[in-house]
Length: 174
Figure 1 (spheres, helix red, strand yellow):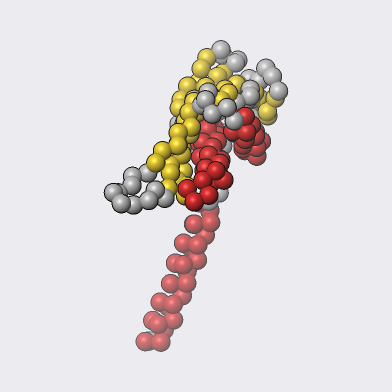
Figure 2 (tube, rainbow, N blue to C red; figure 1 turned 90 degrees about the horizontal axis):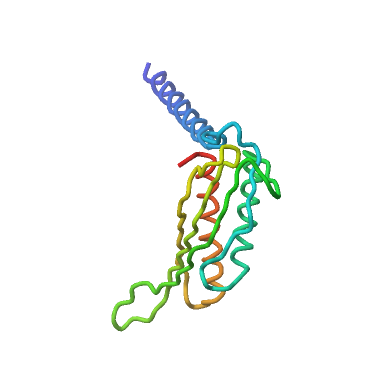
């Protein structure tokens, strides 16, 4: 009997671990796609991203524009069109702030914080109504050892996060 209990416990533990593994794998399959997109919106027009940050670097607006196009194409909720879509997603980079992190007396500055703020309007062209008009923000911390390259990478990472948030905001309605 004692050996039987031992093997039964091993089998129960294996079953438990297998179930947990399957549940974890399945949970990664859930998607927000299509959750809150009105059924009458099939096409999306994304005009060129505006840069109102004052930095004067067209690379940032071009990168954000390409990130948005790539994300919406791979998501598949909308067909992207070059004009006159059922919906329009207008994005402006409002600001890009580069701030020094707190430095204690006697210490050298080692890191900065980049914060990117974007204003986004999601417009229903069929019903002629704004679905949302929101600000999206993200930040990243970078080392000033290689300041220019690190700064550009930090801006790109922040814009990547914002483009993810914009996609989720559009397809899930939050």
